Each structure stands twice: as structure tokens, then as C-alpha cells.
Figure 1 (cartoon, rainbow, N blue to C red):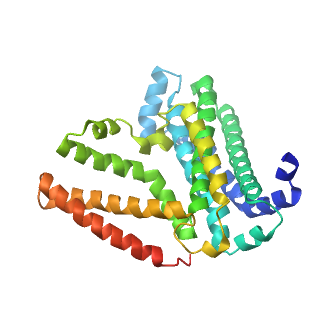
Figure 2 (cartoon, rainbow, N blue to C red):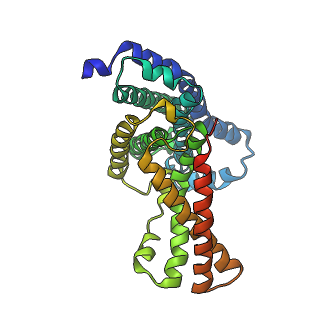
Figure 3 (cartoon, rainbow, N blue to C red):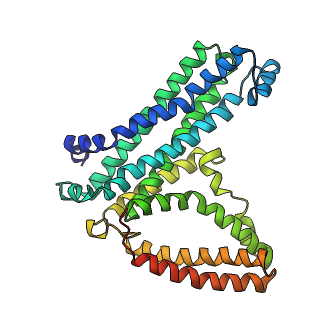
Length: 327
């Protein structure tokens, strides 16, 4: 099994496909972290600090621990790497499908699981290499620019470990989404939905729980899932769980990928049904909220909006499902 997994031909093929993204991640990561410290240094050297640096320098004079280095700059680096990792997943699966290279891949003497795991390992390698190189460059810059006294190194190292887990879990989610998407456009659209849909649900449930006094929905508002990727409120075990589950789901669903299904919104039948139900209900929630706030407040107004939205959403998604997406 391991011998088949590390086939040189397959690894070289997948690396050639992803190597441009490795370069992009290195460059983007550099501007997101090491370059930021260089910019701060020259601003401080100019003697004319402005904006966010005013309170930073004032705080450093009072407390030279520099915890802001961890919470502010690394948070920005985290968000940047998450976005780039999701683009990497789209580049590996969505673009391959769009460029009709998937047909060639499926004709090769490799199993679907072997191809998917190889893609995943190549992507994980790109993320780890680009992250660690930029972190090492950042540490060098901190010492070279005499910023090291500001750092709380234990927190810095801990944060980097959590950061890697969150970025890898985001990448794995993006890859899983690619296994059920039938086109490049679908992959991009579903990636945005996965990121922002929990916030839409929380926003909708807040209105429903207020109107109908449903305690279960009120409890949901205590879990801002949209912030999972960007402020690291959750522990490492949560990120590891997401990573392992999405890897398993991706391997299973990639087996159902067939070139003749390309152009559909989803290529796995069960997810087509989930898409129809989810789109219709989401449309109902949105129209219910709109009617409640803009036209007729109260339970009746929300119910009318929800019912109309449900019908409109169902008709729209059935029509969309009949279309073949070329991109």
C-alpha cells in the first residue's frame, strides 16, 4: 500500500501541477508576515510612526513583552494562508476539472484513492514548507531588526502549531468540497458557502428563535462558527478532528468522481439532494427575514416570506441543476 502511495510518476505529475502555487504561497506569505515586520521597522526608524503603530510603540514602552506580535500579525498571516490554501485546493481539483485534465488522470493506472491522497500530501507539503520558511524568515528578521525583545517566544511557537492545524483543516475542507463539485465555478461557490454559511444560519436562527422562542436555536447563537478559521477560538483537537474527518470524506467521495459528470453542480447524487433541500430552506430563511424586517413584522409575516422563499428557491435550484456549467 505504501509502495503504491509513493509512486514517483504520480508524485511528479501532481507536483508539477501544484508547484506554481508553492511559489505563490511563499511570496504571499512573505508579504503577510516577514515583510510586515520590515515595514514596521522602517516606519519606526523614520521617527514618524502613524496609525496603528502609535499605540503599539506606546504599549511597548510600558510593557516590552510584545504580545501584539502574536495576536495581531500572526492572525493576519493565518487569514492569508487560509485563503491561499483554499485557492490551492481549487487549483488542484477545480482547475484540473476545468482544463479537462481529469480525464487523463482517470485513465492512468492508479486508483482514485491513491490519486486523491497524493494530491492531498502534495498540498499539505506545500502549505507546511511555505509556512515554516516564512516563519523562519520572520524569526531571522525579528533578530536582525532588534525586534526580538518584543516577542513571547513560547506563545509564538504555540500559535504557529495551531495556525498550521487550522490552515491544513481549511485546505482539507477545500479539497473535500472539490470532490463533490462538478466544475470550477461550483468549487469556488461551494467553498464560499462552506466558509460563510454557518454565519448565515446563525443570523437566521437568531430571528427564528426570537419569534418562536425556540431554545435550541438560541443555543446555536453561542457558537460563532464563522470565526473558526480566523480567530482560533477553538482548540487544536477541534482542528485535528475537522482535518481527519474531511480527509476521510474526501477519499470516499473522490471514488464517485467520473469525467462524464463534469459540468454538473455536484457529481455525487446524495449531495445533489442535499443541495436542493439546503438551497430551498436557505431561500425560505432569507425571504422570511426580508419580509419580517421590510414589510410585515411578526410570525405571520415571517411565515409568508418563508413559504414564498421556499417555493422560489426550489424552482431556482431545480432549473440550475439542469444547466451544464462550462467553467
